[in-house]
Structure formats: C-alpha cells, structure tokens
Image 1: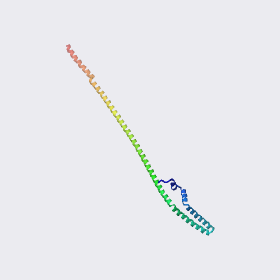
Image 2: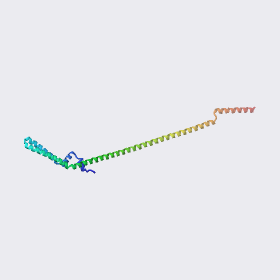
Image 3: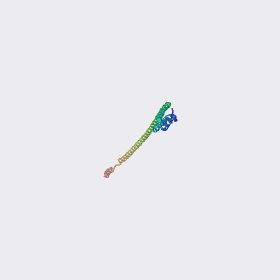
Image 4: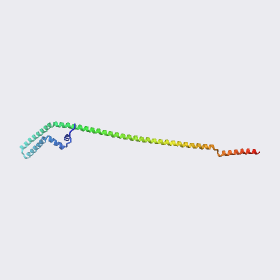
Length: 201
C-alpha cells in the first residue's frame, strides 16, 4: 500500500506551525476553553484590584466552568479523534516500514554497484597481468633467439677458422723447408761429382 502525497504532507512533512494549525482545526473547543479560562482569571484580578468581591467570586466560578469546559473538550476530542489518531499511528508505522525497505533497497543497490566495480577492477588487473606476462615471455623468447643466433655464428666462425688452419698446415707439409732443399741439393751434387769423377778416370 502506497501512501498518497496528501497523507505524507499532513502527517509527516508538516512544520510546527502547520501541526498547531491542524490541531486547532481538529479540536477548536480546546483553545476556546483556554481563552475563556484566561479571560476569567483576568477579570477576577481586575475585580480584586477594585475591591469588587462579588465579581471576583463570579469570575472564579466562571474560571472553574471554563476549565471544566476545556477538560471536557479535550476528552471529547480525544474520543472523537481516537480512530483518526490510530490510523495516523498505523500510517506512521507503514511509512517507517517503507522508509526502512527503501533504505535496504538502496543499500543492496549500492553493494551490487560496489561488487560490479570490484569485478571490473579485478578483470582490468588480470588483463594487465596477462599483457605483462606476454610481453615478458616475448622478451625472453627474443633474447633466447639472439643468443642462439650468436652461438651459431660463433660456431660457424670457429669452423671456418679451423678449415683455414688445416689448409695452411697441409700446404706447409707438402713443400720442403729451405734447409731440406739445401741438404738435398748438396747430396745430389756430391753424388754427381763422384759419378762424374769416376767416369773421367
């Protein structure tokens, strides 16, 4: 059950002056009895100052009657507006329940919004971690590739240097040195001399 705006305005959103005005409209006999009581007190005080004891007695009797009228108006008004006041209390309880439900719904919505924000933040952080991990893996792969290429180049350089060294050593083994050439030429000369000498003899 939803309360109308008029009921909310009457019972829940009224100021102090509006509340007094509403109560005066609901129970107009109570302020009238109060005014009559004040008027009886005032007239009794004036008669007492003048020394008119007969009027003083009459004003005191009028004051008692005004007070009795006021009390009677309060009781009659309480009985007459008892049902309305009970309805007001029920409406007030209903309004409190509605306010509590609205606060609970707002709190639930706020919690849901916070959960969604936290989920979005977690997803964003996970995506950032994945990108960083992928970049790190790519950098490691690139570093390993460069190192492998460097090792392969170093191996090729060593292999080429080894082939060059082998060719040089083979060439040096195939050609006799200068001392070997001189010794072989000396031996050939001595043999030629011996053979030539013996021929001449």
